[in-house]
Image (cartoon, rainbow, N blue to C red):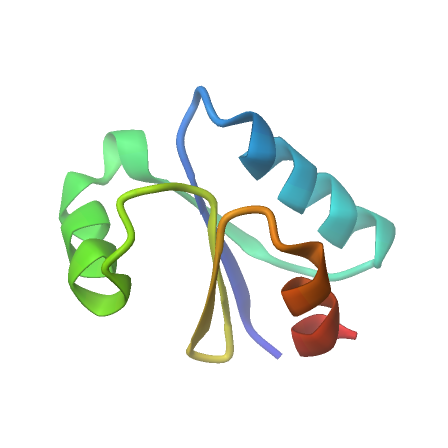
Length: 75
């Protein structure tokens, strides 16, 4: 399972997603969109969302802090 969390430096919900994944013992990659504007544009095109966090799990996206959807995707 590949998990990537797309974040910004000022996002409180991003911190919550990472803490939740840590509690679940999941390994994930973090991509800081503040320092990667090209990736931000790719995500906007892929998801239509301009908000963070965006969590990608095996090519599927979870927009925002949605613990129910995250739980169903990562277990």
